[in-house]
Structures are given as structure tokens and as C-alpha cells.
Length: 411
Ligand code: ADP
Image: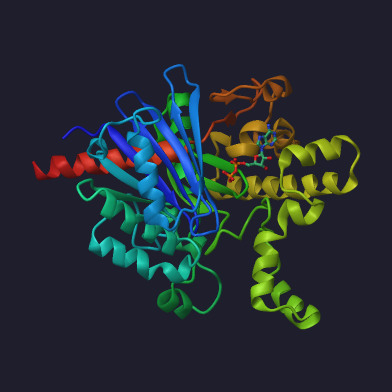
């Protein structure tokens, strides 16, 4: 069996995001998203990617009854004579799912069977918002593509190499043993992807590289990577920990919760909403759109300025912490929407770190570009790279890899 077309899906509670990868030509053939599933009116946006790289878009508005309806309609578009890219759904060799929480069970990508489904279910308490939707995606895709193998790629898997000294919280040990309370980390697919790309770019084996990878999207996290393996990360048992994010606070004093409950009479649910949805950049300056914040700062807005200082100071502190954890550093990698596109942020994060061997070249940093680029000065011992992330491609590559090795093992 030749693995050529891989369908990647990321299922949320009311959405399905998808890409169809043509692995033979290393490109996306079609992509899109079904949104507002189960609501009064849904939206299905589908794009067929043309040979010249442009896309032909189709938007359908109307009720999308449930995830089954949504995925069925996506498949109809994929095989549509005008907007489609395949003739029959049987052309899809495999379906790759993004699954948020693999707990301690999954150290790597896995072909989905009943045991895997049961284990993802067991991890629902650790990711109550995400794992149920991911499971629904697996169930629906299983019924629509009964003959294609399905694969789970976990956000947490890359971080399973983190040693106990870095993942254990200093609370009673039974809480780890019985309730699995510990640091897990997320964005693993992105950190894994950019670390592999960094090794390729630098022309060195990943297993010999120490890297700090900085993913700055709406969610944000840093990973410390020693000899190609993750040894620490900023997100914790949930994605709330660590860096300041679009709407998440990142690290706060854990006792803040008691203050908010006792002093302001907030409920646990309200505190959860506050820290996840109303904090971070949005909480500090009213918006979580980095482009807008930088514009406001340039126009003299004091709140935007301080929000950027808090945001970049936190990143800089973790660069220092992870440098110490790794003891030596070969590369610092910026990725995701902000990391790839905001030179001002990269500059603030690295400012004054020349004694650690980190020095950005301002001209290279300010140059716009789409691909991988090196932005450090010639004297900088640490290579500073901007690497566009591509979590979906990584899911497709992982899906292909595990299916091919399964086929090989059986033959
Ligand atoms: P998500 O986590 O939703 O995938 P992205 O990786 O797309 O997020 O990153 C979104 C963030 O990237 C937003 O804050 C957005 O403002 C920021 N961003 C995108 N383009 C630019 C740009 N040119 N300059 C600064 N920030 C940008």
C-alpha cells in the first residue's frame, strides 16, 4: 500500500478543521473548516489549492446538524467535480487526528484501535474541553472512512521525555500517583516540527543539538530540548501555565485563586474563565491581536507598551531558565504567528543576552520573509532562527510514518 493522500482533522466542540495532504507532491491539496456545528447557522469554508499556489474558495452557509453531518459535507466537497481534489473517498490512505491529551500513556503517534480510544477517554479529566471533541472526530471519521486507518498525534507526546524533576509539582506525591497531577506540556507537535527543521537547516543531527523553541501564537509555550529530546516546557498540567498568552495569564501566584474567591467572591468557574479567556495580552491592554498592540504602542499607548514589556520579559526569563537547565545552547527558535512575524517581539526577548552568546542582527531580524531564516549576528554563539511551524504537515508526516512502519512490520 502506498500512502499518498492523508486527511488531517482537528475536531473541536463545534468545529472541524481539515487539510488533505498529497504526500507524493509534499503539498496541501485542499483545506478548510466547518464552524458553528449544531448552532442555528453553520459555515463551511473549503479551499482547493491550485497548481500555482493560489486557492479556489467555496463558502456554504446553513445548519450543520452535527459533526457527522459536517464531515460528510466536507467529504462531498473533496470529491466535488469543481471544488474537489479526489474522485472517491477511498483515495484517502489514512486519517490523522490531532488529539490534545495523551497523558502518560502516549509517548508517540499511535494507530487508533479500541485500546487507544479507551486511553484517550481515560484522559478526559485532564483535558475536559478537548479530548471529548477529539474522540467525536475519531468516531465520526471511523464511520465515514471505514477502510482507512486512523492515527492519533498527541499534543503532549513530545514532552513525555521530560524528567520527573521537571514535571513533578511539589505537592503530596499521591496526587501524582493516584490523580496523575503533573506537568504535561502542549504544542508538542509544533516544538517537534521546528526542532527537526532547525537541525536540517543547521546541517547537524538533531540528537546532538540543544535548542530552546519558542512558540508564540495565541497560545504560547517554550520547550527546552537537550540532544533532540524535550527536557522541560512552560505549559503545565493544563495550557494555562507559563508564558503570557493572547487571553491566558500564564504563571500567577497559585494563591491568587484564594484571594479572588475570598476577597472578590468569585466562583471557581469564574476564576477559570478569568485566567483562560480574559487575561493575558487582552486583559492587560484590551486586545490579543499582536499587530494591533504593536500599532497602539507605536502611537504612544502606555497600556500596550507595558503589556508588551510583561509579555517579552516573561519569555526572556524562561530563555535564561532553560539556558541554565540545558547548560549549553546551540539554537534559539522563534515560531508561530507572533514568533514568525513580529521582529520587535523577538528583539525585546533577546535584548541584552549577548553574554549568554545570544545576539540578534537587527537588519536580519527586520527583514520580512516566509521561509526559515537565521537572524543572529556573526558573533552570536547561539544561532537564532525563525522557523514557520506547520503542525498539520507534521501530523500528516507522523500518520504516514506509523502506517508505513506497521505495514513493514506485518510483511
Ligand atoms: P493560533 O494559536 O491561533 O494558531 P497564530 O499562530 O496564528 O495563532 O498567531 C496569532 C497571533 O499572531 C496573533 O496575536 C496575531 O496578531 C499575530 N500575528 C500574525 N501576524 C502578525 C504580524 N505580521 N505581526 C505581528 N503579529 C502577528
